[in-house]
Length: 424
Image 1 (cartoon, one colour):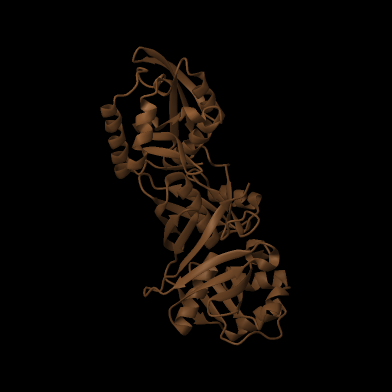
Image 2 (cartoon, helix red, strand yellow):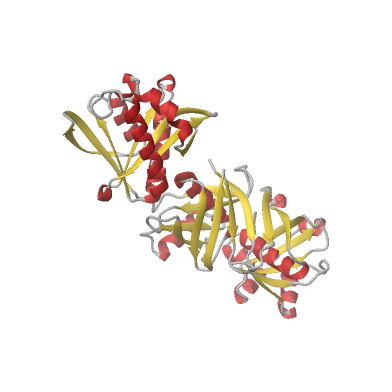
């Protein structure tokens, strides 16, 4: 089931539901709505979406509209949520699913979510309890006894888990996502990242009233300035809660713009740069990688939000048989401020196979590395001109990933696109 922004096409459902006394029994004074009043509420819902980016949502399952959800700003009291379910679908647990979706969207925008129900509507009270809300108070309104429930945002220990650059939870690169790290210290973020154990966990601090966020990234060992796959994961997680569209992340590496749509995200990197690697660095890296020879082409240090050593291998077999000295490569990378070593083999102009050792993050290898993809895209653009291609990564570690790279912009930024999916 999905919650989609309320549109004109949904009005016919509102008209039918609001004329049904079973639906309106516990709404306001309990009376059904006139067509004129239903139209007024519909137009208000459309206007609220224009002004605030939220209001009403149609609950859609298998292409059928099965209910609606609402979010309304109540000032210091928080965001109020409410829902209706088409009577034809009562008894299927849809109210709880709609309410949970509204809860997540509301908490992504504010610190408190509230809801209420009439005294005779115990079913709605049970839904509120199921989604984690707590009873606050009872009061009379419109001559009827009502009960108020609330939930305070407390996401300091809740870590969402997504896999990026894949539609399969068993593939791609897993990332942790904390949607509100406002009250977390640096030590707390590092501790959470270490406990999660993924190559990176993203920590988000919303900028109220906007689609802009301050985002920091931590590996189990240290903070990193930017992480592509965690950016993709975080963007999809946010889009699922506040709707598809543009996002802006303010990161230690700079401002990152993202477009989200249908479970995918396209990040546009900071301006990329590249320079030929020092021969001494290359020699030490090849020794740590246990490579006697590599493929044709220059070895560069590329930047796309973080620094990556870009090394061509001679063939697919050499890439497949990666076996390196973890400690030696980690120490070398720390000495040269490298985030990963990006090993690549070009099958064609449109397809690149890659592996990214990541010992500085405390893991052997990244299954998908968006920042390295951006750096590599900038490198190829500088070397050969504008181009688009796909990077296939993670195959040899059993987590296949697909990264779409667009290195055609004139401002030295590179766009990397991928899907992300919740890890059950």
